[in-house]
Length: 328
Image 1 (cartoon, rainbow, N blue to C red):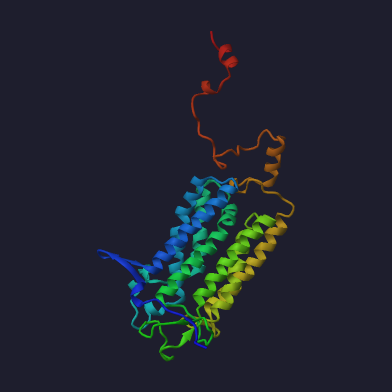
Image 2: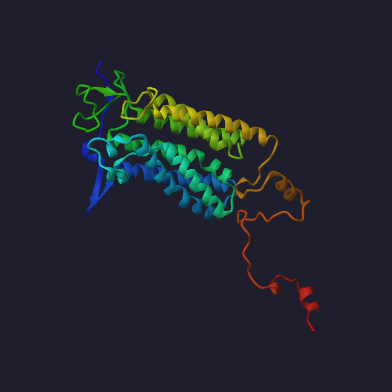
């Protein structure tokens, strides 16, 4: 039987095209496409929860650059050799278009940016993170295509029919192996895992309606449980702690954190309803608004929790009888 394998893209496909002195790299394009798809998915979920589109856009303005910077910082810290090791160039740490983003830093620092954005937009931060969770997984899946075009972050040699070809002339080809060796396509494993995980999150959200940040921590559990076994297959250069890749340790710690937070939030909000999560209203206030028992309940109109703008003078809000009574 003729062996089957996944061909590697030509080395010159790493740069898709060039406009003047500006090069458009496949890796950067994959990241951008992933971001736009994540925004589209999040927009649909956010609006379905009663969220304000303007508020979501304001949060995205903070979260996206924070996430990119955080991802790059984590990558450089966890893989310092190409930048600060022998023959490395520190300035290359700023060349994000050449590849190299650590999802741990991207999610952590991106979440920090989303928190600042949610505060400025006056909406619920946990509600936004619940809305964005499936979209983040889809963005991560698309981003892994950048690893394929860069011929990087592959796994150990394999004889399986879906082995990945790596060009022997590529700087990422391990010198310890003969040309023609096939490797585990870890980019494909994670791509498929993330897409399946996103579908699972959407299904569970429709069935159980996880709120108060629980959907986000469920995303954390789904991603880290997959990243844990996929990371163990990889053979690229990485910092090791007690003989284990640092990303394996991070995946274990974050997975445990995800389980703990999911359970804690479930106990804390047991029996509570969250009809207006995107507007940040606590369940007690939601019930009062629904029953009309509270005269001091805040406005929850289409502004998504924001104070309504004044549209005119006090006279414009008076009834005709009140206006006539005040006339001399």
